[in-house]
Length: 94
Image 1 (cartoon, helix red, strand yellow):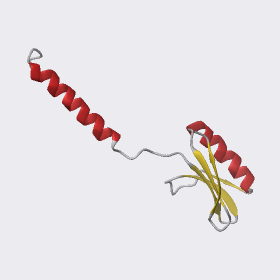
Image 2 (tube, rainbow, N blue to C red):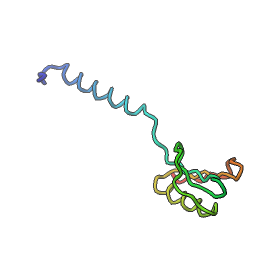
Image 3 (cartoon, rainbow, N blue to C red):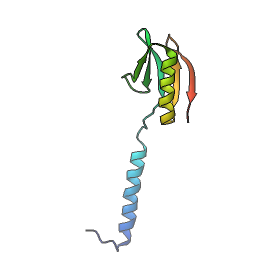
Image 4 (cartoon, rainbow, N blue to C red):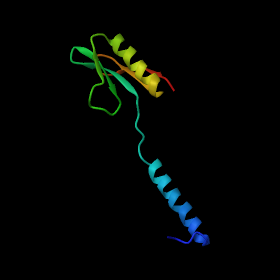
Protein backbone atom coordinates (compact mmCIF):
# COMPACT_ATOMS: atom_id res chain seq x y z
CA UNK A 1 0.00 0.00 0.00
CA UNK A 2 1.45 3.41 -0.93
CA UNK A 3 2.39 5.81 1.81
CA UNK A 4 -0.22 8.61 1.81
CA UNK A 5 2.02 10.88 3.83
CA UNK A 6 4.48 11.34 0.97
CA UNK A 7 3.86 14.58 -0.94
CA UNK A 8 4.21 12.86 -4.32
CA UNK A 9 1.41 10.39 -3.55
CA UNK A 10 -1.34 12.99 -3.88
CA UNK A 11 0.30 14.62 -6.88
CA UNK A 12 0.60 11.26 -8.62
CA UNK A 13 -2.98 10.37 -7.76
CA UNK A 14 -4.31 13.66 -9.15
CA UNK A 15 -2.14 13.26 -12.25
CA UNK A 16 -3.50 9.74 -12.90
CA UNK A 17 -7.06 10.96 -12.42
CA UNK A 18 -6.54 13.80 -14.92
CA UNK A 19 -5.05 11.41 -17.49
CA UNK A 20 -8.06 9.11 -17.22
CA UNK A 21 -10.45 12.05 -17.50
CA UNK A 22 -8.74 13.45 -20.59
CA UNK A 23 -8.61 10.05 -22.30
CA UNK A 24 -12.31 9.46 -21.71
CA UNK A 25 -13.31 12.91 -22.97
CA UNK A 26 -11.48 12.40 -26.29
CA UNK A 27 -13.90 9.69 -27.39
CA UNK A 28 -16.41 10.60 -30.04
CA UNK A 29 -19.76 11.21 -28.43
CA UNK A 30 -22.83 9.35 -29.63
CA UNK A 31 -25.34 11.52 -31.43
CA UNK A 32 -29.07 10.99 -31.36
CA UNK A 33 -29.95 13.07 -34.42
CA UNK A 34 -32.90 11.46 -36.20
CA UNK A 35 -33.03 11.31 -40.00
CA UNK A 36 -36.30 10.91 -41.91
CA UNK A 37 -35.21 9.14 -45.09
CA UNK A 38 -36.87 7.49 -48.09
CA UNK A 39 -36.93 3.71 -47.72
CA UNK A 40 -38.15 1.55 -50.60
CA UNK A 41 -41.61 3.00 -51.35
CA UNK A 42 -42.04 4.29 -47.78
CA UNK A 43 -40.31 6.52 -45.22
CA UNK A 44 -38.04 5.54 -42.36
CA UNK A 45 -36.53 7.04 -39.24
CA UNK A 46 -32.86 6.28 -38.71
CA UNK A 47 -30.55 7.52 -35.97
CA UNK A 48 -27.44 9.26 -37.28
CA UNK A 49 -24.57 6.83 -37.66
CA UNK A 50 -26.80 3.74 -37.61
CA UNK A 51 -27.30 1.38 -40.52
CA UNK A 52 -30.37 -0.12 -38.88
CA UNK A 53 -33.71 1.63 -39.27
CA UNK A 54 -35.56 2.68 -36.12
CA UNK A 55 -39.04 2.61 -37.70
CA UNK A 56 -40.80 2.45 -41.09
CA UNK A 57 -43.84 4.50 -42.09
CA UNK A 58 -46.19 4.84 -45.06
CA UNK A 59 -46.24 8.64 -44.88
CA UNK A 60 -43.39 11.08 -44.41
CA UNK A 61 -45.47 13.07 -41.91
CA UNK A 62 -45.84 10.02 -39.66
CA UNK A 63 -42.08 9.42 -39.80
CA UNK A 64 -41.46 13.08 -38.94
CA UNK A 65 -43.72 12.84 -35.86
CA UNK A 66 -41.84 9.75 -34.66
CA UNK A 67 -38.46 11.40 -35.28
CA UNK A 68 -39.57 14.52 -33.37
CA UNK A 69 -40.59 12.45 -30.35
CA UNK A 70 -37.19 10.75 -30.28
CA UNK A 71 -35.27 13.97 -30.86
CA UNK A 72 -37.10 15.76 -28.05
CA UNK A 73 -36.27 12.89 -25.69
CA UNK A 74 -32.55 13.08 -26.46
CA UNK A 75 -32.32 16.85 -27.16
CA UNK A 76 -31.20 16.16 -30.72
CA UNK A 77 -32.04 17.29 -34.25
CA UNK A 78 -34.46 15.97 -36.84
CA UNK A 79 -33.07 16.00 -40.37
CA UNK A 80 -35.79 15.59 -42.99
CA UNK A 81 -34.75 14.33 -46.41
CA UNK A 82 -36.54 14.61 -49.76
CA UNK A 83 -37.38 11.60 -51.91
CA UNK A 84 -34.08 12.06 -53.78
CA UNK A 85 -32.13 11.98 -50.49
CA UNK A 86 -31.22 15.67 -50.28
CA UNK A 87 -31.92 17.50 -47.04
CA UNK A 88 -35.22 19.41 -46.99
CA UNK A 89 -35.27 20.69 -43.40
CA UNK A 90 -33.57 20.48 -40.02
CA UNK A 91 -35.35 20.93 -36.69
CA UNK A 92 -33.33 21.48 -33.52
CA UNK A 93 -34.53 20.32 -30.09
CA UNK A 94 -31.55 21.43 -27.95
